[in-house]
Every structure is written in structure tokens, then in C-alpha cells.
Image 1: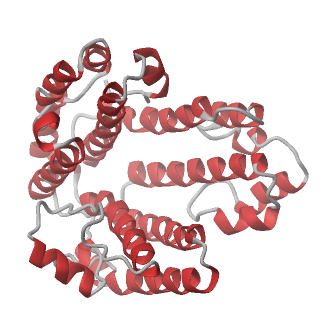
Image 2: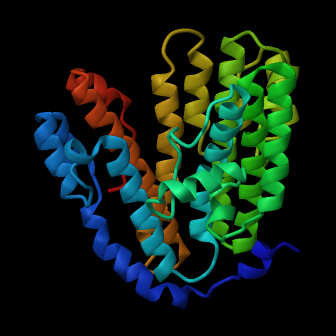
Length: 343
């Protein structure tokens, strides 16, 4: 049993009384549809001020990437300090650990020092000396900061990605190895938390990733062997069945009829060419609708999970709106790409 498994424990709902009340009080500060609409109908300067009211630094003063990264780091640290030690926040950090692993592997492959590249320093701003150590030791963020969450396993997967990239010179292959490792570890640790709500969300995430992969594989005229190589573990729809449907050139929607992704799967079947924006939006909105169920929960781990999911959606929306306005895109074009926000 790993160190992480020993640390994670099932917590009683009553242990979430304080953090649930605290986060409920903070929910009105989140970016919602009304605030997003005002941002879209305003100048970049006014949009930045609206975002400041949601707890962000001035994106025009510090830069968009830094403002969003700092906000994520601050909220993660705050929630982790207040919530029961159940492993929920570490699951949200995991995504960025694997992003960092991809950055390191690709940088090494082309002989670039990864230190100046964009990485997620989830525990906050780290000094240059610390980051040099970070990359010199080829450590993932969690391991360097002392969390040590499955670090040896992450290192093995990172080495596998490094070897694959060296043999094939294909960055996508390295990404696929780390993506599958991410979903496998995520599902394993989600099970350790002992939350049916979290397990449902983890399963839906895997199903969504596999549906997206299947739709893209069909549009790219890839075969079932390729699709099998990119599907991730943890979903409710068996990978073998998805591959069989692709091989027989049948619609994917019937496979997802008993999941929340049925409408998204129908849209994917219909989008044989052209933009996938509507399909991608449906996939993401299905995930939003899932964690929005926590609105009816008074206290419990569902409130924490929903708040962190809402934060991630908020950051994606903020990036899309601010960068779109800075690029001079019409408001309707940006709005069409936005996902539903937690209300």
C-alpha cells in the first residue's frame, strides 16, 4: 500500500460542516453567466475589473497567465488547509503534475531547459533556485513539494514517455502514455477517497475523454487499433465496444445511451466534418451539469468537489474571454465557445 493510500481516509459528512458553509458563502464571488455577459459586452479594461471582483489580480498588470495561475494556487491551498484530509484536493492537483511531466519530457527531447517554460506551480510562486532543482531532479510538482503522491509510479510513466519519444520522435505518443497514466492514477485515488459522487465524476471524465477520442479518430480516418491506443481507463463504456463501433462504422451514440453523454455522442456522430465546437461544448457542459448536482447538498465532500470544478471552469472562461477580447474577437464568437458556468 502506497503512502498516499495510507493517508486517504473516508470522512464523515459532518467533518465537512465548516468547509461547506465557508465555500457556500464564497460561491457568489464565482464568475457566473451574468458577470461573463458583462465582461463580453465591455472593454478589456472593464472585463479585467469584473474579474478582479471575483478574486483575481489585475490581469492587465500582472499578465493573464500569472493572474489565473495565482488564483488557482491560492484557492487550492486554502481549500486543502480547511477541508478534511481526504485526498480530494490532491486529485485536482494531479492534472497539473502530469502537465508538468509532459512539459519536461518534450523539453528534454529537443534539448531545451524546461525551467522557463509554462508550468503549474500549484503550491504557489517558487523561486528560481527551487525550480532549477525541480527540473534538475526531473521531479513532478507533487513530489518536489513533499506531497510524494505516487511519485515513483509517476516517474516510471514519465520515463516510459521519454523512451517512447526518443524511439518515435512523436510527441503525441508521449502525451498518450502520460494521459493514460493520469486517468489510471486519478481513478485509483478517487476510489481511495470513498466518495460515490467523486467516483461518478471520475467515470464521466473518462467517458468524455474516450468519446472525444472516438469522434476525432473517425474524422481522421483512423482504425480501431489506433483508437484502442488512445482510450483511457476508468470509463463506464468498455474500450473494446468503442473500438468495435469504429471498426464497423456505426454511430457511437447508442453506446452512450445510458450515460449523461448521450446528447454529446449524438452531436459527435453528426459532426463528420467542420467545427467540433458544439460537440466539445456539450461534453464539457455534461461535466458541469454533473457537479452542479452538489447544489442540493447541504454539507459533504460534494460541496468541495463542486467548488473546485467550478473554479476550473471559471478559469477556462476567464482565459477565453480576456484573450478573446484582447485579440479583438466579436463577443458572439467568444460566447459560442464558452461552457456553462456554475450557477
